[in-house]
Structure formats: C-alpha cells, structure tokens
Length: 186
Image 1 (spheres, one colour):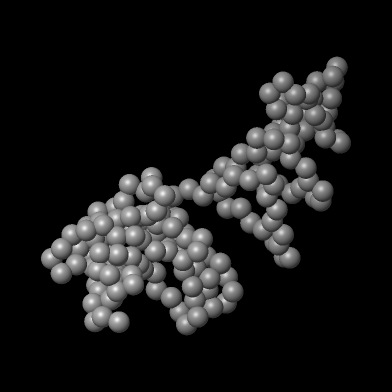
Image 2 (cartoon, rainbow, N blue to C red):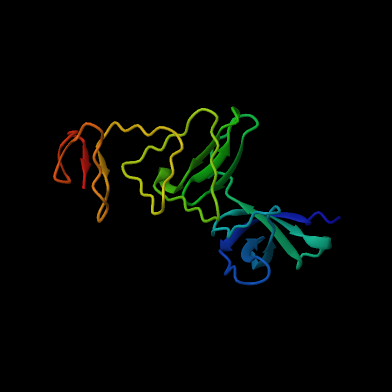
C-alpha cells in the first residue's frame, strides 16, 4: 500500500446530486478534482464547501478517488455512548442520549418543522403523551375512547353543525338559552 492511499482533502463545492453516484469536487495537495462520496448504508448527504474529507486512493490509484466528508468542528456535544445524526448548516439533530431518550431538535434552535407522511401513525406511551402547542388542527374525524377533559373553552357543533345542549343547559323552543360560561354551542 502506498503512503498516499489515504489523504486529507477539502470539499470545494456541493454536488449536483442528480447522477447515479454522489460525486463532489475536492481539493488536496493543491489539486482540484472530482471524487466519489461514501456514506454508510442508509445515509446520504451533499457535503457543503469547506468541509473536511478523508480521501482514499481506491486500489492505490490516485485518480480513483473516494471520500468521506464531515465537519469535525460543527457537531453536537455528546456524552459517553451517545449517538447523533445532525445537520451541520442548521444545527438540527437527533440524539440517542445515555438515558435512552431520543432528542430531536429541528434547525436553528427548533424553528424548523417536522413533516411526516405515512399511511398510519401510531404512538404508544406507557404513561402519558403531551402536545404543547398554541394551536393544534385535526382535519379528519377524531375518536376519543376515554375521557375528554378541557381546562379552557370548548365550542361544540361547529359551522353548519347542530346545536348541542349539555345536561342542565336552559333550552327554549329548540334554542339553548343558558348554560356554561366557557362551553358554547354554535
């Protein structure tokens, strides 16, 4: 094996990422050329310019370049045994913590979105599940097999829906005339 089989390189530009193989431009020893980018099975990226790369001369042939790129200074801080997937340009990450927790933070300190597209989504929590959001929207039917508790106002019926009276509400001539101050029929 030649002493130049493995070299440090600098990624000089992102790839077009529209070909059969991921190819990016890199610079090493004052030379600029294209190289095949290598990622572990199931992972893929388009490495930004000025990222570091570990470049290999495959079969000891310098013109047969393959590289693993990364940004060694721009990464999340991990504890012993922790593992992360991260997005260096925005500091978004998924971290498996020592405790077994899975922590997800979207880009730029949580200002990004999480979009999930699937046929069916199931969440099973042995104790509880909490959604902390100023507003939540459900566009389809909602089925609740247990109790529904609300600490805030609830509007029953909805646009075009039938008026709903609760037990004890005053009803006159088919209209609700009195009832809860925070639960209103529309």
